[in-house]
Length: 138
Image 1 (cartoon, rainbow, N blue to C red):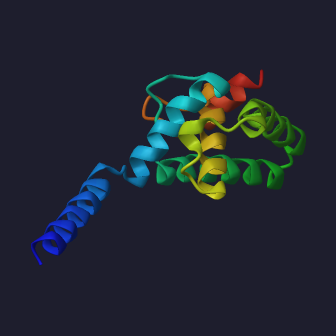
Image 2 (image 1 turned 180 degrees about the horizontal axis):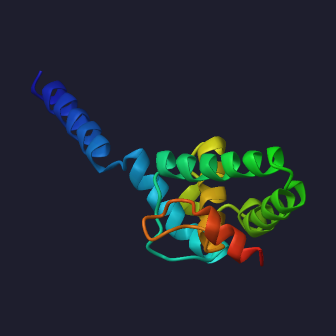
């Protein structure tokens, strides 16, 4: 009986230790963002969470849609092509630190890091459409 109790206690301690040592989704995203900096450029301190990355990418999408509606299709296409080209290195080889992320989370984080790598974010890491236009030479 004592051996069974010890075995069960040891299993519980190992399970608790594994849960306690695992990283949160935000920590995994930040580790992935650091690994993507080499591929996308930008600031090493730019470590968005998945939610922050989604907000950055959504802001770019909204801006591009507004540009198309306003008759600036060619500029919107140039911006999209520029981000896509910047993100291409991350699509070709996914860093090990990013393996724990789902495909969707990785894709949005990669696009957000590409936007940051192009210098299209403000000091708070938010997408800045004026920096985008300046970066495109407009």
